[in-house]
Length: 523
Image (cartoon, rainbow, N blue to C red; front, side, top):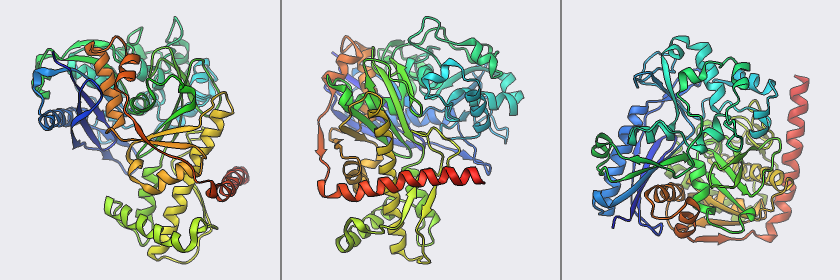
């Protein structure tokens, strides 16, 4: 009996594929880069066909690495960033770029071109905002669609199908036009808990009364891991699989990471998933809705059936450390070797100065806005305590204190969650930050929480494999798939001797936020 699963994860700069067995063990993995078009105005686009080609290459290589026969892959599912794909009525690519090249048909999740449109959505005070933390983010679908209709009317006129990227990939795989409850609930103002899930008056209020003519959206979404049908012959050939493989409704990458690390737990209220790479997503689940300003959601059934999910986030974390390296005169290209060199030097400096290293240097890490808990996409970063020192050691000190600021930003989100009904004391971290020893240490010491790092492989891919297992019928439900496939982790407890230092830093962090607000008001 076929009992293997394929999971595909499309991130900001690459796509990854993994082959798992029915117990959640990763047997083979492959990665391929994807193209991105960055304009001088800061807009970012993907080519959805380039992404599909990279997906197919990665799946074929991962299956080869796992040494599993094509016919033994029972299910496949996809997770992806919440990027927005524009297609014509006949499936052709539609440009969302100022250059007009139809190749660039996908607005990347981190593209903030629609800041003004997001503010217009917020100004409506519509009830849908109660399920996105009260403030519309430019990273969500609605403002991006408004921007294209307003600034690229010819592209909007041609658009006949709109997809979140994960839904586009399931469409390419099996031909289904179904949309995931995860993507629609989290990014498209779909109210999954309501009988009338779409609020047509909201779209009319923001100038998108014609959205259903251009988007091809269903009246009801499909739950994560729902069986959408078999691979088409064309997709099966491209992926190196067979038409016996079932396709499961996918999900946003951070949500896949969340079920990969905390899915299947009975005490889920105590656990938080931190999916941390270019940015950081902070996911908490509960049996009842907990709505409050500054945290997205609560989203019903966007990850696990019957549970509500609240999502905090930091829009630039790994990307901020990269930026600090590029920005500083002693920096350069932020590759793995440079991060490692900086980290090693910080460890040496700390043997001399301890946690007081660069103690008068303070950072607010909101260089790309504050997603949570302030919900202010216009927020700016702040650095206090600079000198004329431009040496490599000064870069290391700034890098260290920026890492501290990222951890304090996480603590700020945790405080908001716990003040609104959660009781989180354990963080499960997955993503690129697990390879940064400074961040992993700080996440425990600066928050006071136990930090768990998965040791069974890529947790984002694992969460997507769980969805594939549900679609393939290997388990009766997604919840049971999560319980059966969950992998153990390595726990790190906070260093009690560090508490006083980081409590003091946190007080400074909050004071800097107050001062920034006062300065903005004066300006």
